[in-house]
Amino acid sequence: MAATAAAGVVLSYIAYREAGADSRWLVAGLGVTAALLGAFAWLQQQIGAAQRDVEQHTAALGSEIAKRERSEVTEQQAAERFRALIDSAHDAIIAITPEGRIEVFNRAAERIFGYRAMEVIGQNVNILMPQPYRREHDGYLHNYHATGKAKIIGTGREVQAQHKNGAVFPIDLSIGEMRGPNGSSGFIGVIRDITERHQAEKRERELTAELVHISRLSAMGQLSSSLAHELNQPLTAIMNYAEAARQMLETAGSDVPPQVPDFIAKAVGQAERAGQIIRRLRSFVEKGPAERNPEDINRLIVEASNLATIGTRVDDIQVHLDLAQDLAPVRIDKIQIQQVVVNLVRNAVEALRESSRRELTIRSRSDGEYQQVEIIDTGPGIAPEIAQGLFQPFVTSKKDGMGIGLSISQSIIEAHGGRLWTEPNPEGGAIFRFHLPAKPGETTES
Image (cartoon, rainbow, N blue to C red; front, side):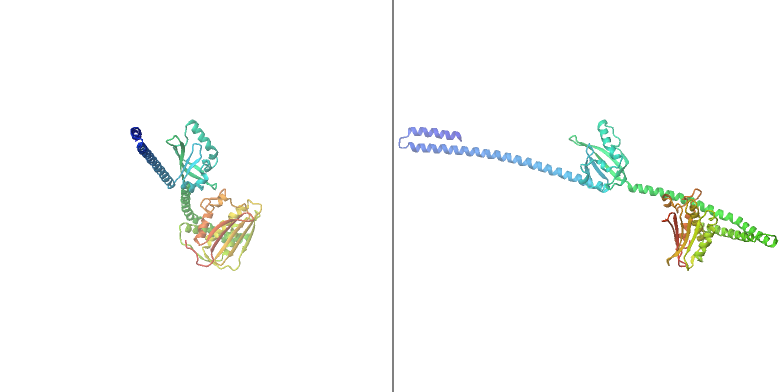
């Protein structure tokens, strides 16, 4: 286009020289017009080429932008999928930097440790550890970076963790090292709260121990049944000899103190009572039918306490009876309940021998639904570690005790539809209480 415009100018000049004076200006005008038209055409060509270049560059730039946008969307989708996968895990997943700063803290970690992710991101992971692990953790990381020797990285072990509220609990911890394509590194831990597993294992141990106790109690029951059978004969012989001695003294006419026959009669009565206790014990062990009749609980308490407190004057023990009046009869096995009272009172007497203040109160009460008996002492009390399992077989605070008296007493009371328990005495010592259904017939047959 530029050459065409130049040629037009040259031709116009030649025509201008050859033309006459009248037509020179016309020729010159035509030549200039041709030159202008050629220059305009060239200019249009250049502008078109420039437009095409701009369009090509614009299209390439748009393609690159669209490619980058697609890449960013893909990376964002991958990150969202990864986060969803981490958050859906049942176990806690925590990622940390080489320096121990938390980078990832999934929802299970929030549930297990009580922190929100925003509270711990950027914090040292040792905030999740109790002492001494907390102060030692940074040293472990430093040693690993310095020596390359791993202690728990790549393995799993059971350790202690600390909740946000300060509670310490057991966890299974597995730690692995992670390295990125750009050379970045860090550590990732998978954590499982094993508190429930520990509780189940503890319960299993308790049940195993309870089975051992039951086995020993069963053996003791069989031994008691055998002893009851074997002791009946010597007790019967004692009663017969004592009765014969009493009768001989009465007929001999010798100078015998009048109290002697009375003492022999009491000895016969206690031997007979001992035989009844043994028979009741054998019946109880063998789950035989109980002999229950309406009984006066106050009279039973007086009889049992008189027997159990023999010799307490020597130990300077003051015994007080605080018995409610007009109590209705209760349907019980007198011998069994009397033995419970004797056992509880004797335990109290033994405890009082170790105390400077020696007072024993035996009380009866009724609320219309139950009749309650209380044995209150001012002794040293019951140690907390003993009180928790006091009514279990073979648990005792006595040096020479077997630990079956309270267990049997509780079984007797519960078989009567009642309850036996203990409480600390506010004035020092212990209180043992049991109650029985107040209305006759409202008991559970053993």
